[in-house]
Length: 237
Image (cartoon, rainbow, N blue to C red; front, top):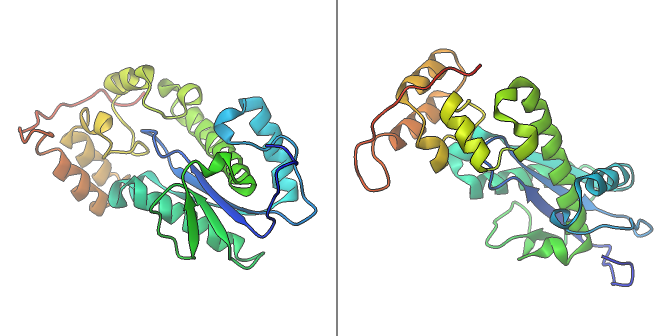
């Protein structure tokens, strides 16, 4: 995105990262840029290399006004990923409201209902400068979170696939079983989850009773209405 394009500096841009993974939170960022702030190289985070994203993240962090919000795997399981994304975006906007008045909000996506009036733009992360900036903040922030989880759960190789449903991730899930930080209502995880594992997490206080009830109800039948065969998995190493 070049400076030749007219930038409307009244805009607050909002975007998220991590709607598709099987592991970890969904992260949202809300960004406002003062009139004199232009950062060379801003673009949709998906079009940038990891090295370039990290470089831009540091510049954005020092020059922009922003808020970052997230929704946990538990919230994703309880409210579904769409509503959890709205929750993360609202948290980001709420934090940003400490620095600027929240108005003229543009958000990447469609049909999103936020606590502030907002205009949804499909593929806005490639069209609106502030949304592109938000996409970089959200993506790099989420990657940093996942790298910390990778230290806790090295067997899943999270730093490689960032929690997305790659073939390798799914194979490792079959070997080690899921963690409470996986999204238990996402089908690849639900398919290999056992009620015995859920019971142990509940006893140990690793999941709430509300999440337990929600997820255990999904284990009763598969998508075709057939009773699932509950399987136990090897404990995480």
